[in-house]
Amino acid sequence: MTDLSSIVSIFISFGIDAWKIPSLVPKIANPINYPFGHTAYMASMYLTVLLTLVRYLAVRWKKQLSIKETKILMASVILFVIIYNLPKWMIYKWETNQNGATELKLTELACDPTFLKVYLAGGNGFFLFILPMLILITSNILMLKEVKITLI
Image (cartoon, rainbow, N blue to C red; front, side, top):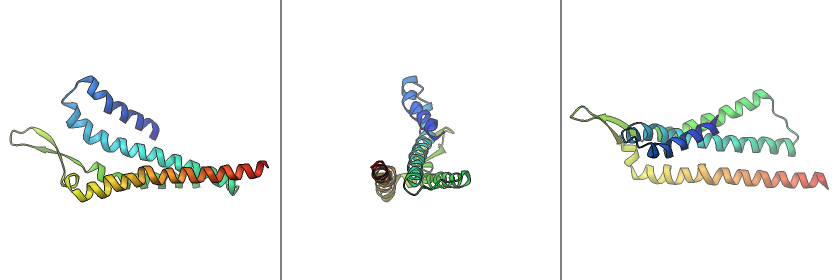
């Protein structure tokens, strides 16, 4: 489901420009698609990491998780992803101007340089790229070593 959500988000991001619907892009697509896409992408990535860790437990420690344990772990991952991505849902706001038209604006949070450096640059760099990649590489290398040992 998270992979499908990521694909839909990407399709919307690239498709709206091709459809040439100018009023849709800033008012609806950006404030909904941006955080939704990031949340779905991160959920997909961390569920893949969870699958790799569960596979490692099965190969190395002969540990099989029950359905209840698996559901708890998946719910924990989804909860972590939602909590981590909450600030992305607070980047845009709709305001009514003096003419009565609704405009899309950035919130104070989105304009804060500390937020941009710490959360968007540092946090995303660590939690979206470095940490999952290190976990995937490490667990797969350890799993490969274990498989080689059992084959010999």
